[in-house]
Every structure is written in structure tokens, then in C-alpha cells.
Image (cartoon, rainbow over all chains, first blue to last red; front, side, top):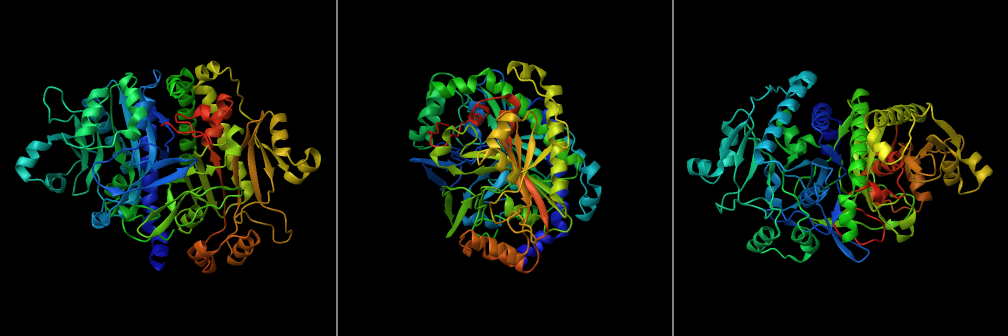
Length: 306
Length: 306
């Protein structure tokens, strides 16, 4: 109890929120400037992102229907872009992921967090990465300009990264550094960078000519801060989606209506990604754990007081 | 299924999102301009707003703890303002309220929605209402300026309201119009207005000299669109909070830690309120039901497809 009171009353937290407010304002401004529409997130749905790692089940029952707490807006972004008048959309999306306790000390996991979940229609992964490059550079520039006192408090020196940010292929990094390559390269780099091509959820697009190559990416913070954003071009054709769901041993039953949309060719070709807010603020402020940049800590396995 | 596909592909929805993006941008700009810090919402907590009407229970279990889905950030806003460096805060807060089916046709209820949940420290209800007056006028001005095409599509004529907005006392309206006064006055008025003094949740401040008078308010949209914002000055002293919880037959057990904060005088004197985004967009666009301004309808008692 004394620990949470001290945390909430700390000068550190006030400084964190000052930087966070500036960063969020920069994101909203950048989105509006680039005509990316802001839509409202949803918390409950019959379908949500299956993720590529295991978490505990989080569901509620309402009027005879079992609803999942959303883990990302992935399919909902695709469905939103079915609208002919909407080409670019973003959600400030709080996600609940009831993580196993093993992630407690990763420094990067919380059981709930917020991501800026973005999706573009008819664009390529390079278009999307270029957009994120400019957004990240803009956010850092604004924080440097408007929060110099706060950064000084944290003893944090930031510089606006040169864009385009570096883009690495995962297979090359794996050959060079072994399977822990993301962490190792994150420790070595001085500016945010991309790693392309990861085998994960069904919805990230696999190359049709070159099976086993995925048109997706992670943006990674430097100095060991790890993953910033995860995204990719999406599967949107019915047969590809079904094949990849089956490969991943998924139960197709809850996806019935989603698969009908794909079958009837309503789902457009899209690309996107989700940027974790708390992880970004952790990088900007140079904190040890994401819990240090939240008001109400939500560390896997730890008791929640407020 | 055909109905939801047509809804999502409708020109109406694209126009709604255009107006919504402009309104949200105006809110974020106004907050930043007025130094109201943006903090991230939480979805799960041992405690949440008890509300003043009944809804179905929404909880999940995690690591032996039963967590409620947040119905507002009320107590979390008070706790945030314990920080000496934070005087004004807002959350874009998605709330889950598993409403009874009776509210299905109210036009104003969804089982999840987003509110801008705002709280100021050391300010009075008049300070807060003045702030909201200016914010509402600014949002409407921006929408008129930037979304004239969209407003024309909806055949909607808006004008910037004269501020300060009218302020009515609930007892006077009740004497004049009977117990359905809020709906009746909402139908009669042409501009948003306030109704002061409502007996409801424990946390809205009751006058110490004049028991039965509450320093709270609703902002109401005109033309029959009903409640826009609900808020008030808050109880922050331990004995007042306990007395009012007991009067409302509340189980005090889950509030143990919150009551310790009050007992130890950590909770500051605050004032605030929550403005419903979907209800605001419904008013701005002149739609019949809040579901018409959401991408993924969440009508009480209706099956959810996506």
C-alpha cells in the first residue's frame, strides 16, 4: 500500500505524464495532418486477435453470448476499411492480455496496456513503414522541443532519428546473432530500427511465390528497450486465411462471420500495425520497466490494488 | 449479416467518422492548450464506479483476483490527482456497462462506449462548467468550420452555442415539468444546457450545511438528444464517503484500500465529469440512435456479430 501511494505521488510520475501528454498530442496531430481517421476502440467482441503467444482467457457472458476482451483491433481494422470512404484509420486501443507470470520481469509486459492501432488500405509495407518513420521522428522532435525540463529530470538525452530508419531482415540477423537477435540488436543500436519477416499470426501476409517469407515487421527501440510496434501486410483472401488458420491449429468456429466477409471478397488489401504507448514512453523517459510509466501498475502475476 | 455489412459500408458511417475525427482532434487540442494531461485508461480493476442504475456484472478472474471491467475512471481520477504535480487530467476511457435490455430503445445506451473522463483539483463546479462550456463551443465551432460537407450530407445545421450555457436547478424543473423533466427540457431547448443537483452515486458532493443538495450536474444536449456529460464536485473526506456508501447500502469491502487513502487524507478535493463521445457524435450528426454513429453496434440485448 505504501509503495503504490509513493509511486502515485512521485515527481517521476508527473514528469512521465507530461512527456506522455506531449507524445500523444504529437501522434493525434500527425494522424489528423495525414488524414488518418480516429475511431473508437471496442473492448468486447466474439472475435479477437489470437496472438502468437499464450495468455489466460479473458471473457464475459452477456445475454447468452460469450465475449472476449480485445487483444488488438486487428480484424476490426480490416472490417472498418471495408468502407469505401475510409482509407486510413487508427484506434487508441486499450488491450487486455492476461499474461503468464513468466513475463513479469521482462520490463515490457503488462496485463493491460494501450496501443495506437493503425491500418491503411491499398498501401504496401514500405508505405506504412515510411509513415511510421515520419511519425516517430515527429513525436521525438516534439518531446525534445516541449519537454526539455522533464527529459533533464530523467537525465535523458534524445535525438531525432535519421529517417528512413534502418531495415534489417530477420533471417540475416538470426544467422549473425542467433535466435535472441532482436534483444541483441536492440542493445547495439542507437536509433529505432525495423526487423522484417516474422512467422507468426495467421493474418500477416505470406509471400505467394516465396512461401515462408512474411511481409511483416517489428519496429524496435534501441538501447535495449525492445519491441515498439508490430505489424504487416494482411491476408485478405479467404483461402489464404483458412489455410493459415488450419496450419496454426486454430478453431475456425468463432471466425465464421469473418470468413464469410473474406469469402464474399468484402475484406480489402490492407497494411498496418500497433505501437505500444507504454513501451514508447518507457523508451522516451528511459525507465527500467513499463510499470514505471503507468499510474496503475498491471504487472503479470502481481496483485492489483487500484 | 447483410445489415451489418451495409452499415459498415455506408456513406453515413464514413461521414460520421469524419465528424468524429474532427471533434476528437478539437478535444485533444483544447485539453493540451489548457494543460490538462492525458493519461491512459484502465479496463480492469478491483474497484470501479458503482453507477446509480443496475447493470449485469462484468468481471474476469486473474491470478486469484476478481477484477471488474471499469464503468468509469471516477476513483482512478481522484487517485491520480493525489500527485502534487498533476492538477488536471483526462482519460479517453472505454467503459463496459452490461445494460439491461430495457434501455435497448432509449437511443442513448450501448453496452460499451467511450467517455472523455476529466477531473480537476482544487476547482469548483463553476470552474469546471465554465471549462466544459468553452470546450463544447470550441468543438462545435471546429466541426462547423471543417466538416461543412459532412454536415450538409446529414442535413444538419449547427450553430456555436452562446456561453455560459444556461444552468437550471433540477428541483425547479421537476416542480414545473414533473419527474421526466430532463427529457422534456431537452426537447424544448435549442442549445446545450446544464441541470444542477442530482441525488445519485456516493462520490458526488452533498452540501454540508444543506443536506439533500448535491454539488453536481448534467450537461444535456438540446433537441431531445438528452444527457451529454455527468459530473460533480466529489466527496473526499473519509467520514462523508463512508456515510454515503452506507446510505446507499453498498458493500464497503472492495473499497478497503480506497477508504484508507481517504482516512489518511491522501485524496484531494476535486471536480470533474465524463462526456460520452458517441452521444456527442449522435447530436452533432443528428442520428436517431447512438448505434448509428458506431462502427460496431453494441445495443443492449442485441447479438454482437463483430
